[in-house]
Amino acid sequence: MDFKSIKEAESNLAFAKASGDTLLEAAATLDLAKAHIASLVRKLDKCSIPSSEDSIEALRRAKDAFTLSSSMGSREGGEDAAHVCSLVMTYNGVPPHAYEMSASDPEVLFQEVMAGKYTTPQNAFPAPPMPSKGHKLDEVVPSVKQLDHAKWGWYSPLKGYTYTLTWQATKGLKDRSMNNNTKRKAYDVLGINTGSKSFGVTALVGARSNDASERAEAFMVYMVSPDVFLKQGSQIMGITNTIGAMVLSRIPKLTVVSLSESQADPDNTKVRQMHQYPITLGQIRSCRLECPTITAGYVGADFASWMSDPAPIVENIFDVIESDESERMYKNGDIYVPLLVERPLDDPIRVVRPNRPTSWIPAH
Image (cartoon, rainbow, N blue to C red; front, side):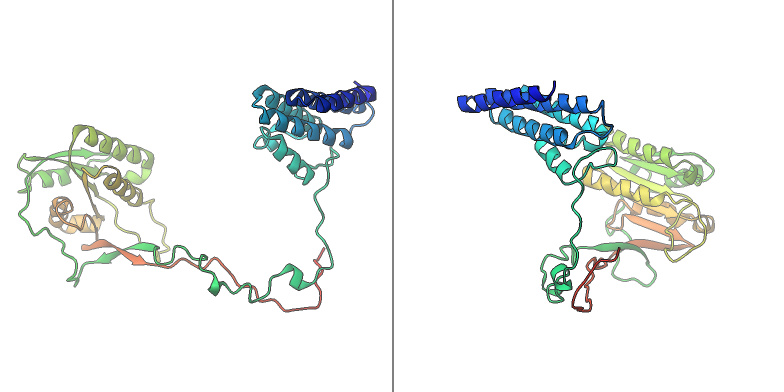
């Protein structure tokens, strides 16, 4: 097609508009867009830079055809218009992944092209608008009173709702009841151990030797091995699958026992192993929310606590599912429980208080 084809397409479009047939007008508009693409291809034989006039006019006509087709519910016409836009972008060296979010809407794509989003040295799309120069500071930066965020009621919507979790030693605490006041129940203990069994077997034997183990209510004890930091992915899937099996089997009680981990001191900068307990606690807490029929507890202990006196740790395997203190950690023989403390978030807004010069010119 050449210049005469464009003139002919424009004449057909004028006739279609006069007829009042919207679908005919959409088809004629799309033909005009294709005529501009043919002209664009013809000019590429003489110049490596695509014609800006033909590119913009083809996009404009394809946008108009898309609008007309959409108003009449013509899906085929809309797809043809989007295809024409893709051809224009391809001839202008724009890769498909750059405009894939806007490819289905020629109106949005046209606006982005005119804003200079896809302009490169290899095409002649409109350049991005240049920033204006010579404005006064008051015209660019709001006044100090406008930046007074104390008057804004929406700038801190989470105020009073943000907390951080810390671990609190129970020594000397009178407001936290560690044991259940009712008579201990009886359980039929089923144990699962991951990885190394050097500590898991002894812990499971201790649990089954406890007075609470009398083959009554079903109870799952999941022993986390000391070498868990070497196989964290397997550990995550192991607990997830165990909880899923408990749901199907209707086992109502679960205690996870970590045999080599205790809470980490956030102020301690020494190199340590990759702890698994934050992920494990997250899985247990999700279990409580998603399956309220399962009572899940957690007991963690470092080697020092286990080797010095394992009896309290074994007792807590049952205590965590019979009291409100469902998560307990042992560190150097001392027991710790989680505590939520209100902690306001850092204010993300910074007040700008500039000097007030007579004019402002951006640096180049």
